[in-house]
Image 1 (tube, rainbow, N blue to C red):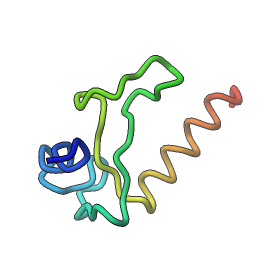
Image 2 (image 1 turned 180 degrees about the vertical axis):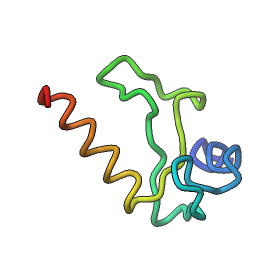
Image 3 (image 1 turned 30 degrees about the horizontal axis):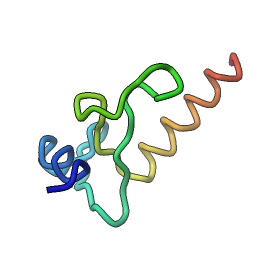
Length: 69
């Protein structure tokens, strides 16, 4: 079983943020702590997120944090 499938299975194939059903071909496996901030590719640092709105919102928030806003 691939890592992304193991991560999704650990969360019951649900988005870690909103609980929506996570779909492999549509949604994302997200780094809880971004790699640029020292996060790893270990399964313990990964979570399934639905693309819209959860992953998009997290990505925007991380961008604002990098910009210092």
